[in-house]
Image (cartoon, rainbow, N blue to C red):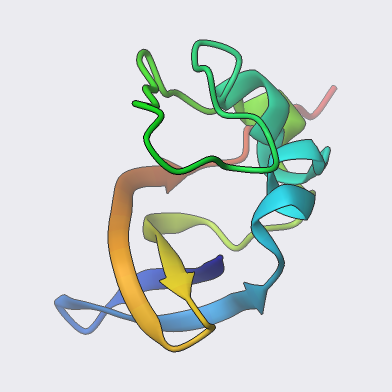
Length: 105
């Protein structure tokens, strides 16, 4: 799995500071980026088996479980599922925004 973050700058999405790769089974159990919650409505389990129809529905991240200090602005997060770390099987793209609320008191 290749995860890449694109930040909206100069009127287009440009690759930002988020880019990393990890194994599929490691990805499913990772606590980062709220992955367990996002895949809680699915039957994805490792090892993946041939001939099984897998599903995911209501895939939605929870902002409170994201890493701190992601720069503010509009973002596209692309998750590429790769075969042999080379061939893209499919991709998922999320468009979102990051905004921090400053409370002075």
